[in-house]
Length: 86
Image (cartoon, rainbow, N blue to C red; front, side, top):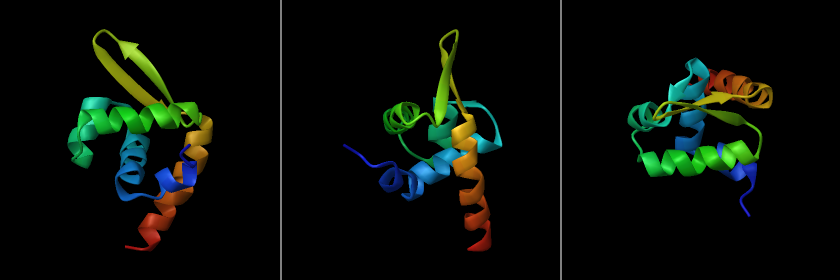
């Protein structure tokens, strides 16, 4: 089974969370912004949903994802760290 730390600290999943923190988006938009496949984004966010970091909202054919309270608590310090390292 995957460990949450192993996933969050990889470049693409971290960028997905940072992208999502900026605003609610659908999975296709995140895939395009982070330059990965829709399938990869879907797999990562399904894992994040199991870890209670995100929730999915279906609006018509679109599947939107937003951060949970726990997700925000994790992402904010990661964004601050990312900014300090730039």
